[in-house]
Image (cartoon, rainbow, N blue to C red; front, side):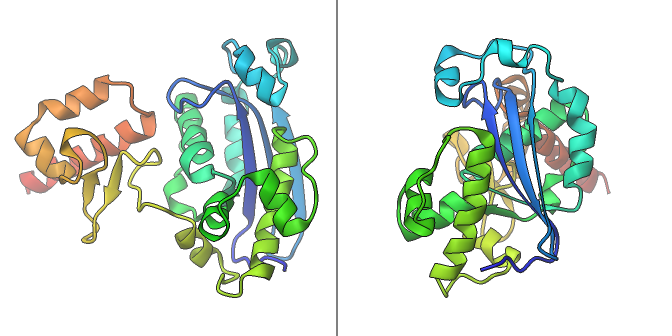
Length: 258
């Protein structure tokens, strides 16, 4: 089944130095940009992470320090990448929990303002886990009856994810061929920030989703325990999380002043 798109949909995958959103960096990004008319564009870029790629990570994706030493940094390509995904919705495999938060961090570190909150996100892994509970390789075999060659290379994983989503739409009539529906269906939590440290409650209010204040309104915690904001801003939290915390604090301050 071909995708029913209102906006271009970018399937993407990242290979990285590790799995820590705050401290790890991208070493390869690959995407397939699918247009509403069915046209497709594929691009893969290696990136110098400006840090050592741990051997454990190299063992997974095969990319070494030597492979990327002459490649551009993320900062060098950030503006062009932002332009390439401008106005696009985003899709990936486990992308809501990892790829999108890490991509947002890289853009913030590069000083490039990309408002990803305006995009729709489709996480093919979430759809798969809700339907079948398996891995990407198994998903590719299950839905497409193909073996995933070159797994853990960004391009192979990206193309497989794209094929799996189309096959999921063919297999499950209850899945609507509509990005708004798929985005909502493949979202586990109604996240405020990409890392899910804050979520919206049933009243669309921001609440903490971790720690001693889990379930408490963010604005209420800031009123009763002002030091908590400072603790988070100085702590090992993603830049995206800190940016949204500051927006909430400024919003509440400006509301109080009126």
